[in-house]
Image 1 (spheres, rainbow, N blue to C red):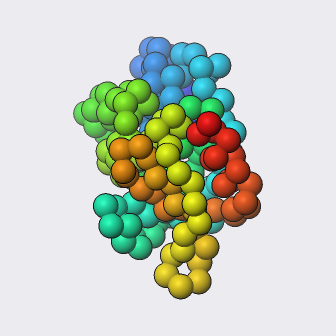
Image 2 (cartoon, helix red, strand yellow):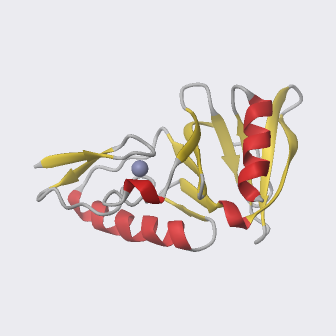
Image 3 (cartoon, rainbow, N blue to C red):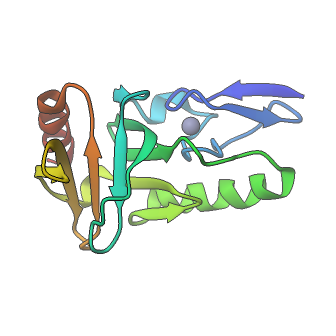
Length: 158
Ligand SMILES: [Zn+2]
């Protein structure tokens, strides 16, 4: 068993033959690392919330912005289990190429689908960034270096 570390999210993908093609955690193309470039990442102190009504369900997350996608991976998502691996890989592949998906709690938004990036809040005090997609879905995140993230998101969406 040889592990392949994802160049975007650092997940150690199990690969029986060293031939894994998609990261099961984020959907990045492992066989072609140059196809996607990581621009920003926030891990320990990041939180996120998603829902139709943007209820404030906050979770610890790893958040990545690449030249192709905004990816939010909640810390409590488990990727272990051989049966699940195949399913996740397929879902991740869909997430990469289609609209925003949230399978097993992992969110992947193609930057071309980002419509607006604006200020928001968690509760009364915590400043957040709200990302809305062309499909009307929303993700709310809090990150360190909020201004940097906001401009990076806006630039990536252009
Ligand atoms: Zn990955």
